[in-house]
Image (cartoon, rainbow, N blue to C red):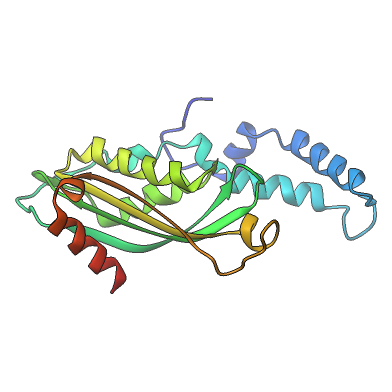
Length: 200
C-alpha cells in the first residue's frame, strides 16, 4: 500500500485498515485462550482493539519524509539537537508496545528545517510494528537524505513491554540504540558533545 502524503483523519484511515478482519482475529484469540467473547466485559473488545491497532500502525500509511520537504537556507554549522522526544511504538515480535524517548541531532550544511519536523518524523516512524534498531536507523536515514547534512545522530532509549511483563520480566530495564552518520561518526569531539548534551 503506497504511503499517503498528508495527515490522515480517522474516517480515511478506516478505509485503509481491514477493521472487520482485526475484530474477527481478536475474537478468535479470546476463544482460543478460553474466554467468552460475548460476555459483557469483552463484547466490545474486538472493536476497541481494532481501532487501537489502526491508530498504533497509522505510520504504515504515512510518509514521514514529507515533513522535511520544507527547508530554509541558513549559514549555521553547529549542532541542532532536539532531545527527549517521547514516543510509543510496537515490537513486531510480540505486538507489545515499547515506550521511550528519542534524541535527534544534525549538523546543517547550508539549510535547516523546523524543529517540530524532527519530532514529527520520530512520531510517524514510531507508529508501525518494528524493532528499535530499525526505527533508529530509519530516522537517521530520513534526516540525512532530505537535509543533506554534515552529520546526523539519533539515540533512542526505551522500555520494552516484552521484557517487562513477560519472558525475563525485568521492568525498568531500558534498551539504548544509536545511529551516527557523518561528523558524528568520524569526529570524536562532535560525538562526545552530542552524548554530553543528551545527558544534561
